[in-house]
Amino acid sequence: MKTTDRNRTVRSGFLAACCAVALVAGCSSTDADSDPAPDQAASSNEVTIAVTPTTTTVVDPGAEPRRVLAFDTADSDEQTVDLTTTSTVSQQIDNGAPQDFSSPDLTVPLSASTSETVPDDDAATGATRSVELTIGAATSPDEGLTDALAASEGSTARLASTDSGAITALHITPADAALDTARAAIERSLNAAVYRSVDFPDAEVGVGAVWTVDQQVLSGITLNQRSTVTLRALDGDRATLDVAITQTPESSTWNLPDNAGTLNIATYTFTGSGTLEIDLTRPLPVGGSITAGGEQMYTDPDSTTVLRQTVGDSIGWAAR
Image (cartoon, rainbow, N blue to C red; front, side):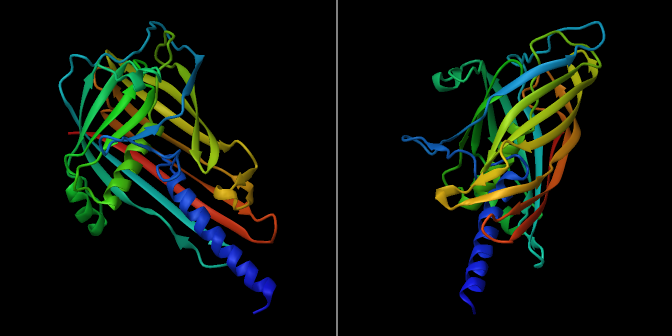
């Protein structure tokens, strides 16, 4: 094999490995594998995943009557819901055969309660309440993953949150016997919930109101995510929200980890939509789903190698 051909083969293999790792984690905006590294607590196995801040802007206040929508869950009973997440990634280098780097679908039963006692580190992020989660017997169509998940039953998590619903931190404490594959899958699912959550503006709004929620998503590439939220219906404390999502890369260049070089982002599309059912007396959505997807193309500045990806994800909530 000529030296140039060999170098191109090695570079293509490197691109495949690098992009697959980054975008399998990042394609759904969940980014659990390539977010800033979680902090491992010294005295326990709790993992803390920082969450990027959100900026909420009212576009249209909607019809009268209007009111400030805020969560008040202090007196609510324990909430039980199923969180279901999916993530697909198809990748192709040049004219090679497409490769599937999708993650198995996952359904995680959650029991949630709210505490107004906020640890100091969470209070520093602006959180005013803690949502305590207990993880039940998670399942997947992948039998191997379901088997691995068995030992994770009883794991716990905590969401640091504001009264407007903005999540400022995610803490996960796996069960002692939890396997690494199951821990990673649950982290991805909970992180998906964080980056598909919606917070309310601090202004008064009525039916028909529209607001945007801007947030950066870190997935190897820094992405600017905008969620456009429409208050379709409001019945007491029950709100029906239509959500449209777009992501755009902050830069046209991807600086690979560990000074491994750069890739040009030739094209990047990622959009989604769905509906969430929110009960302001409950800490988690009581129903609804959001589905998103797109296509990306990356080029190697030092060769003619082109990498294309088609990605998709969904998140769903169902009350139990």
